[in-house]
Amino acid sequence: MNLDDFAAKLRRATDIVFFTGAGISTESGIPDFRSPGGKWTRMRPVYFDEFVSSEEARVQAWQRKKESYHLYKEVQPNIGHTSISDFEKRGKLLGLITQNIDGLHSRGGVSDDKIVELHGSDRTVVCLSCRKEFDPDEVLASLGEEFTSPRCDACDGLLKTGTISFGQPMPQAAMQQAQVWSEAADVFIVVGSSLVVQPAASFPVIAKQAGALLAIVNREATHIESLADYSYQGEIGEFFRQLNPLLADA
Image 1 (cartoon, rainbow, N blue to C red):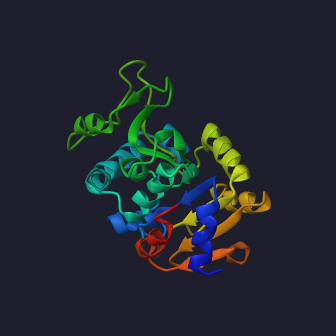
Image 2 (cartoon, one colour; image 1 turned 90 degrees about the vertical axis):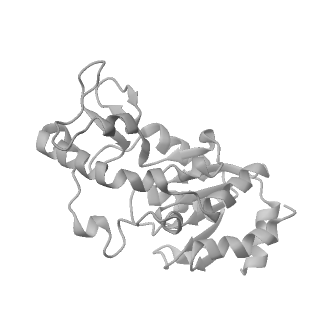
Image 3 (cartoon, one colour; image 1 turned 180 degrees about the vertical axis):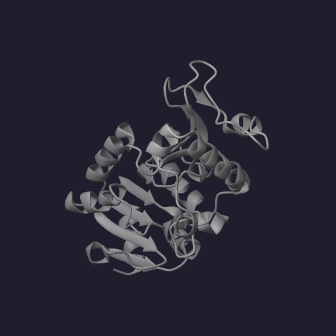
């Protein structure tokens, strides 16, 4: 299937689901931590059980957050994010499942009730005990050069960024909504994910098995490329620059 044929399918589709990974945000300037040379290849992550049990681990995790948070404050959505938002404006977006924590889909115009953030969000801080939420700007501003890990002002519980750490249980409500959308999609489009992180990467397979047309848009081939009805390997921004004019009347 070529791009013209794929665009024709999209024009007829009514329930489109996007599944996005780090690759859609690299063109906004956010590093892909899992790529060769990325953060997780150079720096051991702080696992969830370590965060809960060790003050040293908590301080280390918050120190890293202080150093990287500016990335998420300064970056802007790119053509990939805004193009997905356009599908919602056309009434064709059933849902958006993302592995990203950067909030760029919301800033790009997709409604929050259309987004499932499988790995949580960098836009909030949560008490692990009472679940009270805090503004990360305020929490990070309270951390000086030397600091102890922040605590909840309501129950003195541990505060943690709203992202899902290694070893932390996946959010059940998000996983269930992603399952529902995957099973109901008539077109399921993977954008910027290598599909190696489970269980999130199972959703394209679920969609395909449920009868969806499966498209994969990524810089490199994925391990489920043989399942794809349409595949594009290259820059994501360039893909949407080619696709969007074909959907102008959709």
